[in-house]
Length: 103
View (tube, rainbow, N blue to C red):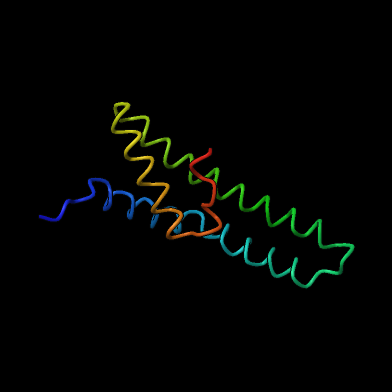
C-alpha cells in the first residue's frame, strides 16, 4: 500500500498561488544575481546583499503562507504540515526556500 502524504495537494496549490502572487520575487532575485555576477569587484558586495535581501523576502513570504495555515491546525498536525511544506518549497524553489525551516 502506498501511503498518501496528507498535505501534498494542498501544499502544491499553495505554492502555485505563491508563484502567482509573488512571482516577481523570483524575477528580481534572478536579476539581482545577474547584477552581482556582472558587478565590478567594488560593487559586488552591495549587489550580493541585494540578492540576499530578496531571498530573505521570499523566505519570509513563504513562512507567512506556511504559518498562516499551520496556525489553524493542532500542534502535531501543524508540525507535520510545516515539515512537508518546507520540504516541498525547498524542492520547488531551491535557494529561495533554503533555510525556511529556521524561520
